[in-house]
Length: 302
Image 1 (tube, rainbow, N blue to C red):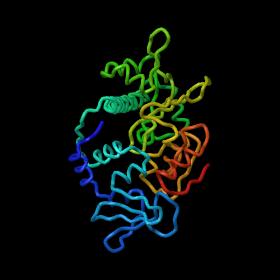
Image 2: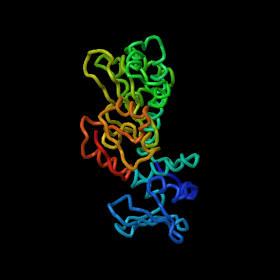
Image 3: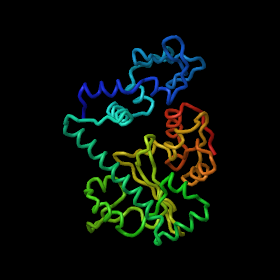
């Protein structure tokens, strides 16, 4: 997939680079430019410059520089196309496309999987309030989660054998995007079976707030205790953190890293929002890099 030069220029002109950079770097005006500590290398004196006139940035320390697309690509670890899409979304610009077979197919599949995930998050959340979700409701009551918390994290409940699959098909989704999402498996007999059944469900969002995966907690003594989405076209465990989209909105001078979904949610309910959890079994090097890339800050592991 590619976009015309005209639309790319429109997206660039509509997104002021000072506004975008300010979301990640504390800037102070000095003359015609703004300066701050470079987010791409460690430094004590600000050498990172942003020019509102030229709409570019440059670090005199490490030499990195470019326009608003370059900055967002580097700071979020995304491709140029994804940076264009993110900034277009921010500016409410509808993106036309020029067809380019394989890339277009991949982008179209990704867009459909995001829609599958979004529908599923809402489907599971609505299930939580039904009589069939009694076990989940009892667990929530035991953990003293408020209705505001349930809605903020869209906590849900997965039901029977192929309940989600049937709902997705009824909604018009096709097998290819349903299977790619990892929410449904096809067995040897060709039957479609929901990956998550009778579990408390936690949608996992990326930094932009898009639902990219799910975690499901068992509500009895069966094993495994948790089932998580497999990596796929929209989801990479090492590039994401649970609670990242929420933590980015608050004070990120320090980030608290906890073990799992419920730790993040419980702290958030108590007003502590600068908290995330890794999506692997341990707090590894990749998770550390995600925190440094997304927040440019220190973290405390609990």
